[in-house]
Image 1 (cartoon, rainbow, N blue to C red):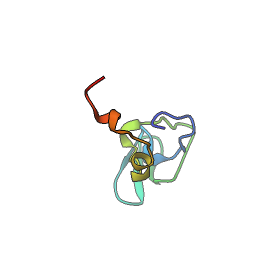
Image 2 (cartoon, helix red, strand yellow):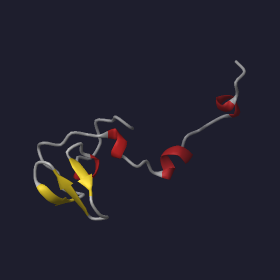
Image 3 (cartoon, helix red, strand yellow):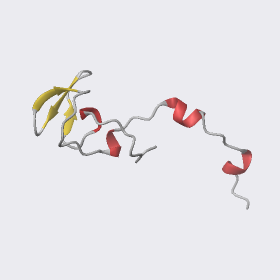
Image 4 (cartoon, rainbow, N blue to C red):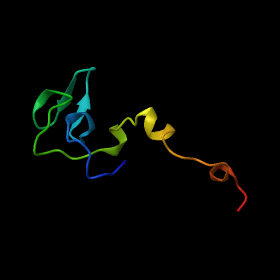
Amino acid sequence: MLFSKEIEKRCEVCQHSKKINDDEAICRKHGIVSLGYKCRHFAYDATKRIPSETDFFESNFTESDFSLDK
């Protein structure tokens, strides 16, 4: 999911933007825009993505996943 092609294009996770408050970002290309804004210059930045808690808890881990024994 981290590098999925299904990532929604929005300024919140774009390389060209920086979040300035809960609703807005400053973009190198378009100035101040909403976090949901998108444009043709979108470039995904995985470090800006905040995963949901369900991504982790919905995984089916077993005891052997946390064991050092083979």
